[in-house]
Image (cartoon, rainbow, N blue to C red; front, side, top):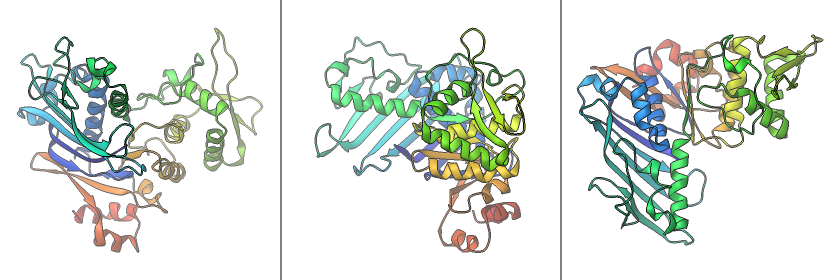
Length: 396
């Protein structure tokens, strides 16, 4: 499942935007143009599906702090998603309007989920209103949910879909609804990754069966331990990337035991007798491993968004990240925001969907570059050169 179109109104600098991402995306633009706000919108969508909408908005300073210019009356988004590489042609439209409840807390005023997909255990397509909150009722395929269900006005009905009363009535179709919720909830945005000396990422960890890097990146050790020791393809990819970045001196990653049933994360170098612990690795090496693990994970979330992946990395590492991003885009949707011409130049064998963010009349505008003009310039110049020269922004 991938995003086909995202329409947003009233959120931070996104007064009224429409974005059509591809499988692999880079969002560029000067500082202060609102690139990061696009990623924050993806975070809000994920939080709304997790049942964490009110908590997310509270952590942002309350709903008034994230309304456009403090004067927008509501935040709304319309998410159109499509099947990935499935032969089934289907689309889901999910719309939410969030207003102020007069105590600076969110109020889900309207929620609508329209499904156009194959009917469960049938080859016939159908269209249905799965959720309709506009009339103060919950519909599932036209059937009203029991009025005894307790529904918070500060959270979306989608986040509560597993607990609503139709769960036992239509188990096949409620599974599809639950799966849709899980996919939206899994959207993952990585920014402000802490790799400092006191970060949890540098410490020993209790081994646990984990496959996905959390949003703050701090569970890198258990994820690496699970995948590196249990998935040969993952290990091969990590070793290949580390060899490309550090040459023949890199040998392997090891996880010796530590006290209290914990494990350590260490890198073995051929030139050193003793492995180098996570506490001693450079910030750039840890960030490199973090990004690699997020992109290589065999079961990626619906969307992986990374804010400024070039931060703290040597330019020689950027083509490696770009290469694995291209491979990951065949399995999930990838979004990067970047200021780096070197990172844009790293996409030598692929042409990512390039979106330019601009600040115009007090709001963010998004312009996706495509068509003959872009193709003409790319015949002789790289994306990085066009970005550095200002030519990309001139095309919008």
